[in-house]
Image 1 (cartoon, rainbow, N blue to C red):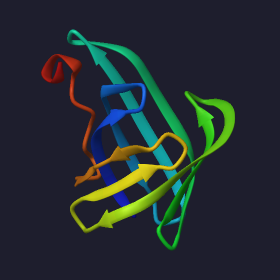
Image 2 (cartoon, helix red, strand yellow):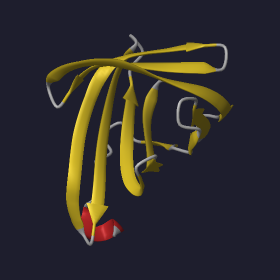
Image 3 (cartoon, rainbow, N blue to C red):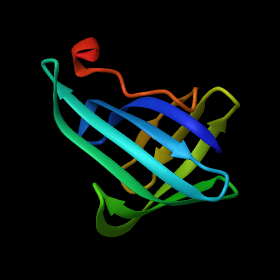
Image 4 (cartoon, rainbow, N blue to C red):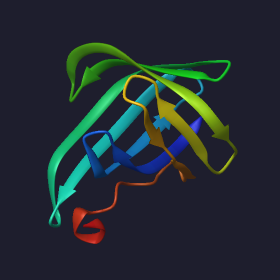
Length: 114
């Protein structure tokens, strides 16, 4: 799980993109952007802790855009390799398929993606 993972799609928008930065010490940082007609309409940074027990991934969110907001997302890991993952959000039955990217990877511009 450690590393930087980039993907497209969120339950509220198939056009959203995200970067999950999973650190070896259990910290996690998620960056999210939703684009409409070449412009960002929503951006968030979530920070917290991650854990993997068997095939269940838990992302505990501590802050959203720097403000305290505690909740946990739970996922079932379907596949995992050094280059790609597939997991499903258990609450919303939504699949994610991120690929590994360099740790210095930055979110693409909305102008390039929508």
